[in-house]
Length: 495
Image 1 (cartoon, rainbow, N blue to C red):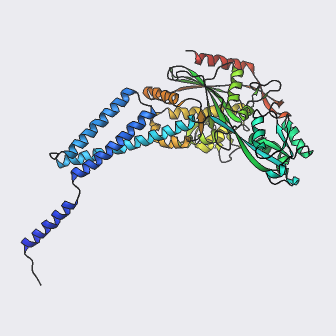
Image 2 (cartoon, rainbow, N blue to C red):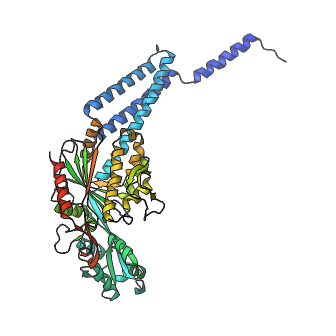
Image 3 (cartoon, one colour):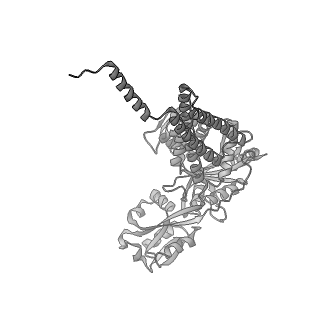
């Protein structure tokens, strides 16, 4: 056995230690790396937050000042050979923390920008159509309908665009009908080989005429896209009162698809006072569609012709000017409720929801998730006043969401809220108007005061402009509630 002296062993350990230390990155190099990452994160954050436009200039200056000061500190301590080891480690930790903050801030800002741009960048509406034939007809493909008679509804404001779009696919003869019942009868009488139906009408038939649905089939679908015609009347949203028409679409497709407007609320905002007025108009309200004469229609059907038709019809009804429009997919936006951890609703009676039997509501205040919040907002069969009470429930859900969103503590759930809202709404408010309004509210951090009222009426069975002579349930207007709403809106819009 070869013996090694203690001196030689010590020297060998020193060599190994020196070699290991030499191969390890120094604190100075680590500090430079983290400070560089911090600089990149800071620049990305400032660029994104500036584009987002939610901070006032003085706020941006303060944020930049402290960020630059931290950057100088971390760089100077990393580069300085005189800095003590403890100071260098502190600078590295600070740099890592600031980098994380800047990257998170940049991510939040980017998500917000994408959400707003997605909501304000849609300038068209899409109508979806189906070509239907009888199952016994022998037609299975659109090409088989060449030179055949195909039925269309003349009440469709996009009649020409619809006819032209299908004509580009197949040459055919157009048969025009004033109402849905006559057009459906034509296919049984062999006056037409097929009929063209907007998907909104198809949904209605599925609800009311199961015989035709069972005896017919769809052999072709297409869409007609048109430029949106809902030009805003702009005001300074930071300081001036303004009105928004909120349309709650129950569309099965994209938010840009035209659909029956199941939720119709005029929102009047007084930013100077932190007050909001919600005016609910029942979906079945019997109104004169804008630009039409003769037979009135259910307000919900106005949405089939586009959001501008709904807005102008409500302007005619209330005698007001509505500055902006906003359209939400109610089934989607309700997901925000879960992002907020649920909401509290106050039910004035006990019932089990008809649309979702798993949702049972007791009398009084209770906490609900998105599934039951949606069921609560859609319920009408449990109430003696039917659709009127459904409108009140919808207002209650919207109010609960607004109240939670205006509470600063829910900023911690910001990304969850943004993800839930993504692709669920569109508006003709501009990007700058939305960010300027948000900037003003972030500065004041006020809790909004929400007041709700509703138009009322009495139920009846009447013919409608969209569906023709066939009588449907409608709500005949109560003029006193309209007059009261007009007075309240005028009060809110006063400068």
